[in-house]
Structures are given as C-alpha cells and as structure tokens.
Image (cartoon, rainbow, N blue to C red; front, top):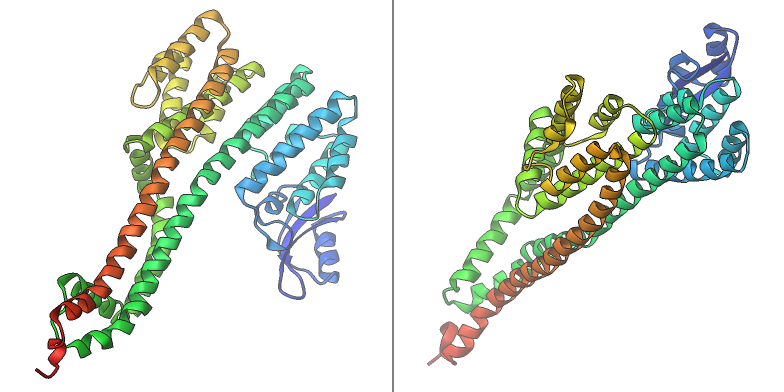
Length: 414
C-alpha cells in the first residue's frame, strides 16, 4: 500500500514523499528512519495533491507553467495513443521526458495508479490543481465511449488554445507594465535625488522661485521627510489590496468594473464569451451532457457575472427551457453570438457551431487587444514625457529668470 507524506527533511526544507508500507505505522516508521519529520500522512493519493500544490521541496508552480505542461502532455498522449501505444507505456514515456520536479511527481503518481488498474480520469482526479474538471470529464467521456483518441485530440486542441490566449494576454501587458515601472522609477529618482541637489543652488539665488519649481521642491521635501510613512503605506497597500481582491466583495467589485469599464469591457466580454463557447463546444462534441457541460463551465468561469449567467442557463435547462434565451443577455453576450447559438440549437449542431464561433471570437479578441495596447503604449510614453519634461523645465526656470534679470540679479553689486 502506498502512503503520501508531507513534512520536513533534516535541513528543514519542506518535502513530499511517497512510501510503500503495510500500514500507516510502518510508513511513519520508515519515514522517520529516513530522517523525515512527518506533518501529514495519508493513504495513496488522498494527499498526493499536495505534490501539485507545493511540488518537490516546497516549490510552487505558476498556472502558466501548469497549462504548458498540460498542453504538452495531452498532445503527446494523443499522438502516442493514436499509434496504438498502451496507455501505461504512453504515460511512462512522457514521464521519462519530464524534468525532475512537481510535474514529474504528478506523472509518476498518475502512471502508478493506472498500472494498478485505475482509470486515467480517476488518477487525474487525485491532482485537481493540474487536471481541472473539464479535462477529467473529457477523459472520462473518452473512456466510457471508447473514443479516447478523439477526446485526447480535443483536449490537446483546447489546452493549446488556452495556452495561446494566456500568452497573448501576458505578452500584451508586458510592455505597458514595463513602461509604467520605468515611469515610476524616473519620477522617484527625480523627486528623491535630482531635485534636492538643486535646492542649495536655488537658495543662493536669492530670488523667488517660479510656482512650478516651488511645488516640486515642496513635494520633494515632503517625500524625503516622510519616506518611512510612504514606504509603510506602500507595504500596507501591497498586503491589503491582494487580500481585498481575494475577498467576496473585492472580487465582485472588480468583476463588475471589468464588464462595465469603457473599452476594457469589450475585451473582457470577448474573452469570457469565447471561453464559454469553446468549452461548451468541446464538451458537447465530446458527448458530455448539456447539464454536466454547464456545471463544468460554471466551475471554470472566474468572472462572477458570467458564472451567474451559466448557472441561470443550467437552471433553465433543468426546467426544460432553452438555454439560449438565458444567454441572450446583451450586457454580457453579444446578440450575434446569441443568434449563432440559437441556430446551432435548432439544427442540433450546437457543439460544432460553438467551436467555430469560438475561433472567430478569438481572432476578434486578438485584434481588439492589439488595438488597445497600441493605444495605451503611446499614452504612457506621452505621460512620461510630460512629467519628466515638466520637472526638467521647473529646475531650469529659476536659472532662466536669473539670466533674464541681468547682472543685478541675485543680490549682485550695482
């Protein structure tokens, strides 16, 4: 019997270890002899999800890397299974290619369970952080319907598209975020280090400072005198804002802002609609029931407004009503999308219609995202230029005034 333990090694580093023993006491004894201080011990993979959460040695894996691993895994598994390779051998081959770390540990556990006779979907269920409900449902549908290869290909396509969308979003935000960080750095340097060097010079001039210069000098002095409070406020914001965003009220306010903000809402709605359409299309083409598909989509939808919309559609289907009527909400779903869904519902080809619709939506979303980022970047550069230019002018204005006043300026002899 296998036991999975979480604890610490002799150096104090977190560790996740799997040991084979007759019972829990023997497993704990073996781990103690290996110098492992056990904090959690469970049979099989009940605690194996800890590997996905913390990884080997306590390392954490970002969602982006998890999606990359999953996309590669599904693509390779689809190719191997389609060529007639037994499932255990296919998973073993992928496991050998994986680098040591949490993902390799997950593959090892999945392969062990499949070798012991478990279904692939059941083995994946032990690692929900790596294999979400949609992934497991498609695999289960393939196992029960005998179309594992087709399901793996659909899942590989789905994960690759999700990976592409994520990379597009992250890539579009890198340059604007970099510009913002540079802007903050330049302004901080000017106020904290450059302006104070001119303060002594301005005092020797003996002439009143221009209003813009005086405001900036006062701001610089206030920052230098209260920098500890400012740092404390920044730390408090860095801790408090994430906590507020994770709260129910914070998440609802943010989600509401995203679906109502001008320009931003267009992109947010487009990506949310495309995700729902793609998931629904893949699940329906995979012979997953409508109610089950809506349940899975609701679980994987992060925006509360769209999750509530999917829940209303699920309730409507339960009552025997059309879910398209529920999705006909112009505040969240474009009427063109609703019309396409209605056509697919009437023709009985809802899955294929939604999959095709998702492809068009992704193309439109990519164009809209490029348009917005193309507008944001010059605005940030313009703002940075105005700020730095204003500071530069404010530092040289007193010198210009002194030069214009002639040799009698600054208290000189007549």
